[in-house]
Image (tube, rainbow, N blue to C red; front, side):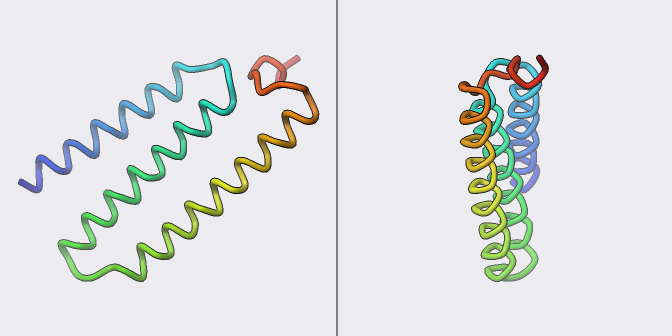
Length: 94
């Protein structure tokens, strides 16, 4: 049973990783995929901690970091759009 959950997390993370490297058009897509990867890692850590002991404090800390990471990413995206006019990746390199 534990191996099945572990394989689901690993496959989900790998799919998101492949999606991240395959998409190369918009920055917002990259940020959404990175946020999905972060949530996958947080879910995996919560699953491991729930097997060992109660990890509510650690989960609260991880969700706090996840929310701050999302806010920083969104503010950087808004700054990038104001600077270049769109969120296309090709605007970053030329």
